Length: 229
Image (tube, rainbow, N blue to C red; front, side):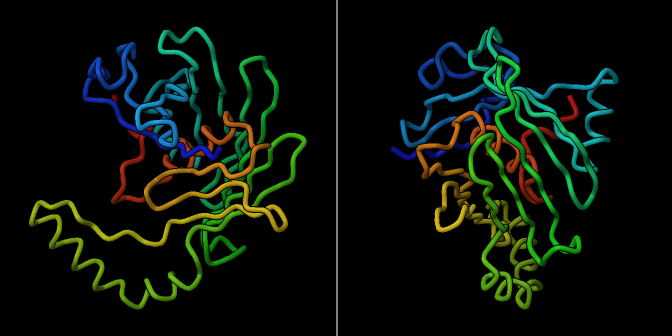
């Protein structure tokens, strides 16, 4: 059975309505849910892991691609499902490791920004320990060729949408299909879900990937980890 993982924001203040997400502790603002098992099936509870200097230092490092967060297995923060740390960060290329709750390395991510010297599209490389390396590119090249000539129209449409209050702002191509040879074990859809197609993919790694990709949402999006409080 495939899994469809999505970062879902909780109601303001971190409290979930009991009928929606029972038992969610105060303090959490986002969770990773598996919509294939029901829209509110929680896989992990997301929380930034802040450096000693706090939120300001996190947000400063974040601008260069650094990320650090925990995926808790339970709302009481008793068990870590996974932890993501940055091994190197830069405006063009950033590398991350995902560690399990017992200190085992689950896998790594490498993000190479579009036009960074290695291609026209943002490239994501995902490697799970003991498994084939998978590579995915943001958006199909055909749709980027369609998108850019019409960019002034998208800007105008976005401005009209903002002033009209309907919130309908056009987005660039966002779909990512990770390939490992002839296999496509992972896929990111424009509805902000990471779909796990291969049974060998570690769900902890997929959940961390979902949170990481969503943290790189565009300026018109809603990155979950950029809060100033």
